[in-house]
Length: 494
Image 1 (spheres, rainbow, N blue to C red):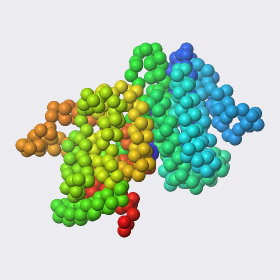
Image 2 (cartoon, rainbow, N blue to C red):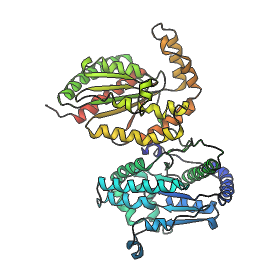
Image 3 (tube, rainbow, N blue to C red):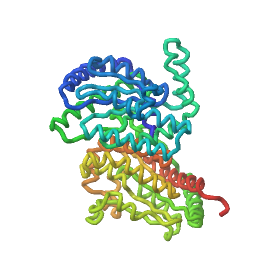
Image 4 (cartoon, one colour):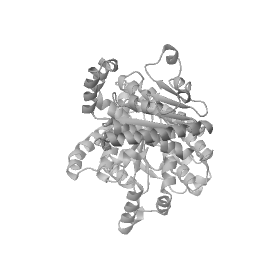
């Protein structure tokens, strides 16, 4: 989930200085307009230690008019607070209508911290997050706008940042004992944070995940997001726009995960033939073992049109007993499917113990084609991220091996494959007017894919990115990955 915030986003000082004056002007004008509005704005700034939360909040206070906003930081509860329910101190600090409240950590800090230190277990954390969702929904139903930003750092970057802050007498106070403890527990902290963000990132109140390595980048990104969300909410409340598209888990100015893939990777015919024979033989053996041990497998294939999904699937199915698998091709829903929840048709095909189900496109159509083409409303596709994560968690908890592949090619390679298909009689049917029309929305789909990966790539079910400009390389990478993941879950000798 945090891959989007580990790409090394930076912003040149000249670019920052060029954009800040206009941003500050727009924020102040919007704040004046907000003063006459009938809703408050609640901004939550959370994240890993050393991620720059304090710096971002200081800049927001500098850019906005402090007379009409207030910043709150919560430490250990006072005696007065201990004598009341734990949410009392948050409720009493909520901003009135027309004002802005900025919160450092907020009601998320204690549940995350308590789970990291083992003071509560997963079930107790789930109860805490349920209460948080209920409270936020209550505020939203009353008109409040809640903006949630998470500042993230890689483990190595966090360690370096904390050392630098502690070394400087002017900033050493920013490094707390909690930060040091969290650094030692970084992996556990991030795993728990992922669960928290996934559970509480709702359609109307999502988290924005921002890389905190460069303060210029992170502060500008947060500032622009705040401006966009308030503007959007005012317009929506005034009836100017019912469209809430654009509320995002990632920022469109962030580098795309897809852009980090090396599409020059390739495999020559000899190596391909040798490895294909090796991994298909290995896969055959592993699938038979999985059947004996009653371990089911679900393979999900998504990617660009002509990305090579079909070819990769055929290299898998040709290696295993036809009685062991089913391939489900997902197209537009039938009348029967459309009459149910969109996940219904996928639940229908969950494999029995020891079997394999391969989805050629899947439930992710909800946040890709249905989002981009407008077949689902904004509220429908935005809430589907958490629905999908919960669905996949149910599969994994049952013991199913779930692997999700995104096959990525560039736009030139796609066009080349389209043209090639048109010259082959048995492939002509694969090319339609929709394929060429979809190319016109390449950038929209790219944004949708980027957010899909960021919001649904969990530790339990990560997206496996495949560099697919070279079909041979892509097929071997997929076969090898399936074999490795099967080997990891099967008990040898059984």
